[in-house]
Image (cartoon, rainbow, N blue to C red; front, side, top):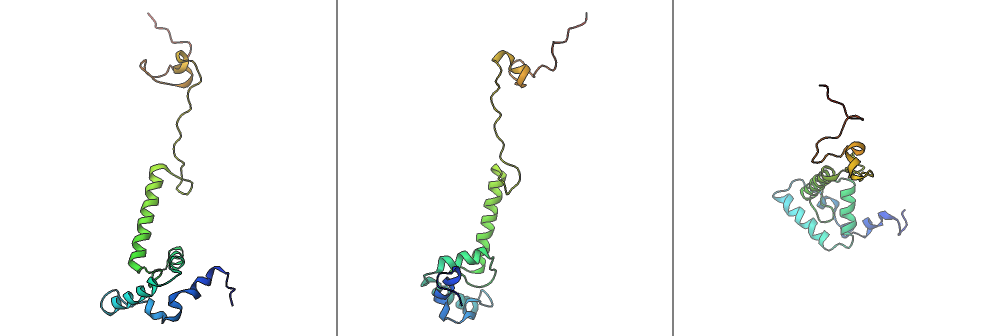
Length: 140
């Protein structure tokens, strides 16, 4: 028996605790199954632990039934949207979970302006950086 302050206690406080569990797992999403789904969602509408129920369903990838007032299709669409948003975030800037960190800007070149091409490889109006020192002499 679980103590009242344990995390799973929300299940015993749910409006569905007194209902037939089959009500929350309709066989189909049309016809009689749709009416059954609507009844289950009505229970959820009165429930004080609806947020905890939905969080549990999402965290454990509950693929079947009505959880936290949501249907299987609603949770599937939500997970797909979250997956898409996460992929977009990774593509836009990267993160530790996605692989490479976002690119960092190059630090400023500490050399004086007239030596930046030589020491830092900075290109400017003069063209690409010099490749060697001293400059090569032209043969005549």
